[in-house]
Image (cartoon, rainbow, N blue to C red; front, side):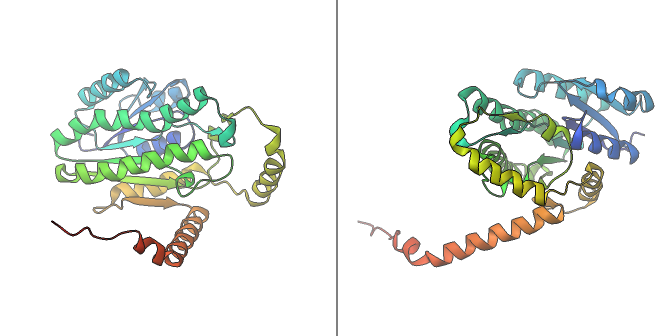
Length: 278
């Protein structure tokens, strides 16, 4: 038992977080699962009382994050895999968002992951290593109509995580940005909608048609299986795409960006000239 890995998973009670928790327990590992409401984990706690600790936590509360991370590391002696999975989806056109909604989206998806990353780093550094998984999204590959604020929060998370990976590498700490495609979770059923501006109704109708035609959600269990393979590797990547759809989208967006850069190369290079030293 003592040789099993210890996971710290945020947003563990539902969706992908629940799938990650179940997969880690099935692998014989120990888990600290945190969420604002941990009652959905009661059945797993009953089945794994010695290997699952469910703790209430609002990741937007920085002080509480540090307290819970400290409690978790003291109870299990270490933290091996940290999964920043807690998140929320706010839908709406950029013009439609209230200040409160915009700030709330960043608080949950960006600042929550930042506070957890800050809290676990001293633990991982002291024990000589660990693996931080930052659950991002297809929304971080590009901005899409009605997901502007959500994409912004995930873009911010990925920029933070790239820097974190470089800063933590010298301490044996690995960081991977996990970019899932479409998985059927309560992220969609619990999403918040901005107050609609009717000028965007035609665009909304077109988007609804596209989503109805192209929607093909996968089981969260498949994402969890991929994550188990990820953490078992000796040399994990900085980024891991989950799903064929997100894989194709990533390559398409990258290709179009490179084509645009190449088309404007002359203008780009002409905008820079070394200033002669006096």
